[in-house]
Length: 137
Image (tube, rainbow, N blue to C red; front, side):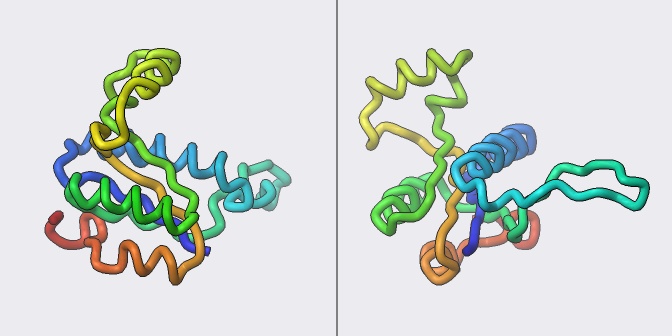
């Protein structure tokens, strides 16, 4: 199993951090096996279980994000997309209403969370840059 976050390479720091948070929380809900049992420290204090696989953050252009979204869906991977429709909605109800009238080709993705077999994920994102490691492309 492998999971990655891919964010648009033109996002400001604030939007990039927000996108990563939204995508990670939703991915944890969609793939509950990613979060193991809680753990205790030496004094018995309880600590929430943390994701049990690495979660690299990669970058891609918006055209590439749209293509990744489509290819990942065809590959039957877990896909979470954060689009401009979600970013602009003030409430979840407004998001649902606007999304229902937005054709898929009109969605502009700020980021994606992908999860599935390591080989499938690597095939999709193997050439993407790691966020902060190299120049965003």
